[in-house]
Each structure stands twice: as C-alpha cells, then as structure tokens.
Amino acid sequence: MRSDEYEKLDGLALAYLLRRGEVSAVELMDCALRLAEARNPPLNALCYLRGDEALDRARVAVPKGQFGALPFLLKDSGLASTFLPSSVGSRLFAGQTSTIDATLQTRFLADGFLPFGRTTVPEFCMAPTTEAVQNGGPTRNPWDRTRSSGGSSGGAAVAVATGMVPIAHGSDGGGSIRIPAACCGVYGLKPSRGLVPYGPQRGEGWGGLAVDGVLTRTVRDTAAAMDGIAGMELGQPYAAPPRPDSYLARLDLPFDRPLRIAAWTEAWDGIEIAPECLTAMDRAEQVLTGLGHEVARQAPPPIKYAAFIGAIIDVMCASVAMTVNGFLLNKPAPDLRDLLEPAILDAYHRGTRLGAEAYALAITRFHGIARQMATYMQDCDVILTPTLTQLPVPLGTLSMATDFETFRRKAGRYTAFLAIINASGQPAASLPLHWTAQGLPVGVQLIGRFGTEDTILRLSAQIERAAPWVQRYAALAT
Image 1: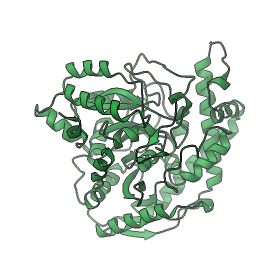
Image 2: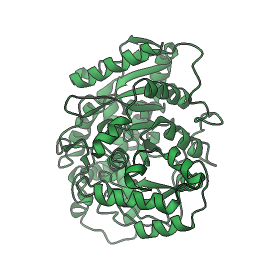
Image 3: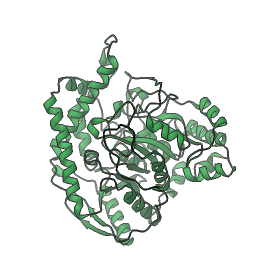
Image 4: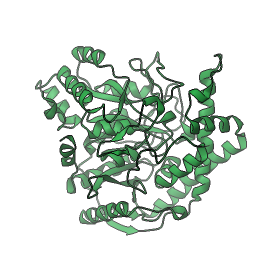
C-alpha cells in the first residue's frame, strides 16, 4: 500500500482491507511511519517514537477487534503502557516507564490498535495549547503553522489531521479533546464521566473532570472505537452510564422525532465570541434545521463562571502538588525551577498551601454545575455551541511564562463552553463544520445529556453526511 492510499482511508476502511488480505499489518505500519517521518518535523506532534519495535509487533500481529492491527498513537498523558515511556509534557517526568498497561491501553490493544509512539502535550496537560518546553518547541497547527494546534491533545489532533494515523488517543479534563479537534479540523468526542476506564492505578483525574477518548477524521471511527473502550471497570469510583451493544451499529438509525436543540451564542461574564465562530454556528443551525431538527437560540444557565474557573484552578493546583510530591517521595529534592515551567511551578506552590476547605468547595462547585446543566436539559435534547470563543490562537498567546491563575483565567475565556461539561460529566463533541476564507477550521460543539453518546454520535453522523468535511484533508496533505 502506498502512503497516499493509506492517508485517504479511515480506520474502519483500513481494517476492512486488512481482513480481506489486501494489505498487511506491516504495510500499514510502514505507511504510518513514513508519513510520520515526512510530516512530523515541521509540526512537532510526536514523541517517544518506537518505529522498529512497532514494525516487529506488526509482523507478528494477529488481527483482532474492529481495527485488526491499525497503527495508533497514545497521548503523552501518562496513560500507562509497558511499551512506551511518557513525560506528561514535563522535564521532571521525562522518560518515565511503566510495568503495567492501563485498563484503557489493554482495551485499545484488544480492539486491534498498535501504538508506535506518543503525541505531544503541554506540561501536565494543563493548557489549551501544546507548547511544552519538554517538547523542544511548540506543536504547530497544520493549517497555519504560526497558530496553536490546541491542547492538551494537540499532537494527537495534528497526527490525525495530517493523515499519520486515522485515529489517536486523547484525553479531556477541560476541553483537551475538543479544543485541538476544533483547531485542527478533526472530530473529537468527550465521553460521559465513568464511561471510559481510568484505572487501574487511578480512580479519577482532577476531581472527576478528566476523561479519555479518541480523535478521528470520521464519526464512524469514533463510534467503533467507543464500542471497544466504553464500559465499566471493576472498582471504579463512578458508575458507567448504560451503553448500547454497538454505537457503530446504531449510527445510521433515524431519530423517532426531531431533536430539540438549544443554541448558545453568548458566553458568561461578557466573554467575546469571534465573528467566525458565530458564522460556524449559523452554518450548523442551517444544517440541523435542514435535517428536520428544531433549533432555538437560548441563553445558557446562570453559571457563576469566574467562581467556576477559580474552582478549576484550586483542583489543578492540588493535582500538581500531589503528582510532584508523590514522584519526589524518598528522592533528593531537585531545583524545580529547572524542571517545571513557571505557571506549573506556581501551581505546585499554590497546591502545597491549599486548604481542605478550598478543595471541598471546588468539588461542590463542580457538582452544582452538574445540577444546573441537568435541570437546563430537561427542555432540550442537545445544546449547540461554538467549540472555542476565538480562532486557533497565535503561538505564544497562552504562555505558561506567568503565574498559574493568570494563565488559567486567560485560558478560561478561550474555552468558555468546554470545561463546564467536564464538571457536569456530560458527553460533548467538536465537529469541523466550518473553515474560514483563510483556510482555518472552526469547530462547533454538540452537548448531550449524561450518558447519551448514542445521540451525539448519531447526530454527528447526520451532520457529516449532510456537510462532509473529509475532502478537506486531501487539500491539507497537498
């Protein structure tokens, strides 16, 4: 198989050829590695590449699951893998290895994914842009290399958008799947809390904000991946919502009635929304009404947004302190100024001083937003929002060379419609429905009720058929 043939096909199409014997696992891996070698250097999306070992694994791979033996990339988020080290984007953690696979990694392997490297992230995955010092430079947006690829799954979105892999692992604690999906023009679903396993070493991340998933070019690849990874893990602290036997099998089922969709075109605290993001909303409304659904512009619930961002800051700082102190336990204390970026170093010091009352109040604020959102959605099936309030920002706009609170409040204005859904635990997806005249992708977000991935995926598939975006990737590759 030639690389130009490989990059035109989604994961399920490649798996189909593999099952028919028209292509081998080694050919697929060779294509992925050649594209990574050619396309990664100017974009800086990959780390910890293990090409030779991956080819060896492909030679003995027995096709399994829905994807057979498909080249794949794990996010450098610390997801435990016995095959790939991780740094979580930090010089402090560079090259850390694991003696076990995370439950999610085990499910990826069982479904036919063959990891050959990791994708870049910001330090501790705590930024909506991927510009970690550990990576030796920023991860650049393939549509405009002066702009951010998003974060924290920035490298994953770049790898998928440029055809290195059709599917890549991502995680989302405050928009980290949806932000880069919007910036790079790919599809990204944040699952409901508890649906995708987080163990066995951890029960939750960031007070329940963080979840794992994938980024893809096609909706059907995400649906098929969810078939393989979704479901309760023994002993996890959050019950998984019910799931259908197969998201993929239900993807083309029509809805039994028009969906009621609330469209948000205003954010809290007077946060500005760029005209191009509102144009994307107009486009989405046209497509949805053309599909027969009912779209009505409504005000969002009265969330105290500034206080919510304060709660996120407290929980993230506590997480940094716990992570760093746990790592340094029984080790000589290094000079953290040489190993942590300024914002993360500040978060560490804040976290070590944070009181129990402040942490408990932050979790209570998250729970309050979940109540508000559940109540709000009694009158609608889906919420439509811009994914981001601005176009992909120029590199350096959201720098970690400042204190953590200033950094995170600035990030919160860019991602106003995203982290609230991490707090509420609902599913949400970013769709690449619009491009500017200059060729920049602009995402729109669909938010569903808790546990309604089926609805979000089916609606996304309807939109994809009515306004396909896959032809955009050929232009990007050229």
